[in-house]
Image 1: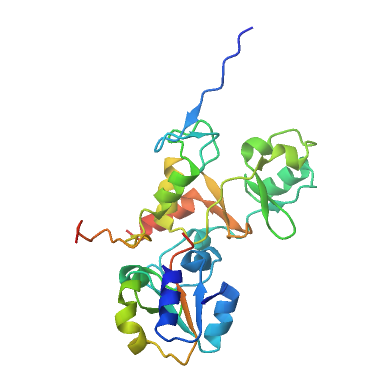
Image 2: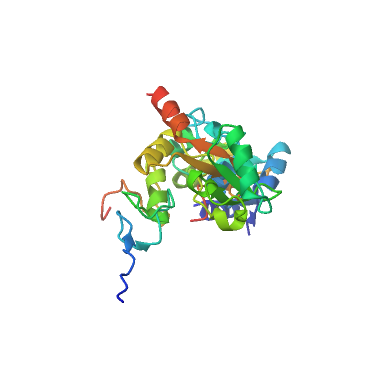
Length: 63
Length: 160
Length: 67
């Protein structure tokens, strides 16, 4: 008797292994997405210009 | 940022400085009002159906199904007396044997979204993932309502 | 040492006259901010805090979240 392992599900953005899509909780979701990438997708439309390390995304390197 | 700002203000001679460390995100996640250009845009919490049917863990699936269908819904959120979300029963789960305990039938710990997520962001996600509905909860897990894809898509399109 | 405050304490203190300051960049403030908050981005704090804020009143600062 052979056992076929369940297909490993991977986040379509970052590739990490996930149990199910974090948006719809399904394993057969076409764009399975992990929790972190989903949070980033939802925040994408918010312009986050600050970087907490102190650098600005608009500062020139070395200035 | 705010810890550095708080310390700097103290060093500048401000005698009583407080840091709301959890910040704007905490405020919005609690469903509290804000001001600004985004403040008037439709959000998940505004559009979620507050009359979504709910049930408790100790109810019978058959009775819940009958009640839900009589109201014209095909999804019900499992909550406790504090409206903390425990699970979700969609059409597939509601079709189980009527004597199956709710705790066994439901999808436990479903994905939920915060009330402050903008309608256009929700619409994109729900369409991409073919998500017909999703519970909207506050940061302490309390049910705000069930957001329907058709409602959020209509709201997002009406702003364009 | 600055004291931490939660949103319940924040509401009480603002009602009692505390100054509420968002230290994120101005663009973020314009998009969305807490009711009654003023914008004082962290980079401008040194230059503007003493002229914009009242030292005799409590000040509450906030940004996006704890991260």
